[in-house]
Length: 143
Image (cartoon, rainbow, N blue to C red; front, side, top):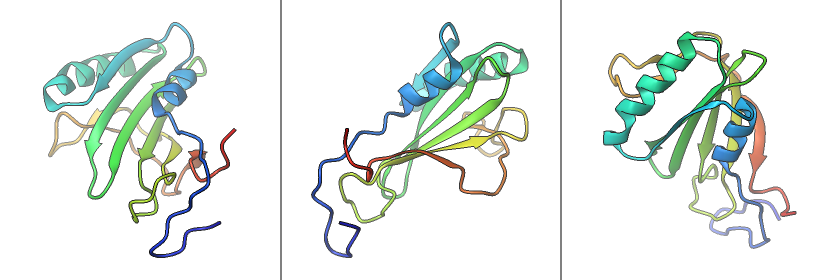
């Protein structure tokens, strides 16, 4: 059953876990810069991620962000191939406050990892303008 305005699908769904996806992309033994869920944790995460990104090693950094109507998580990872990736999790991609509407998209960074000028504690990288690769969708049947 697809999304019908005013109704949410009731089928069981799988769970999209951005931490597992990002850590798998970084690979075993990668430096884990952590997961900042609060502003006071973000400075350490940003410092670690920028130090790791300036080198050549594998790493992962995850930060929770404030969404407008959903829970947003952003992760950055670099694996053995040296490619910097950005993962984007949105807990409610439908915007209708339905369960089973989360998704994760993967973007290849086209620039180095930096911070936002207006928000020096927010990591960023430039990506191509496409929506990115769909890595997980909770709308897919559960397994």
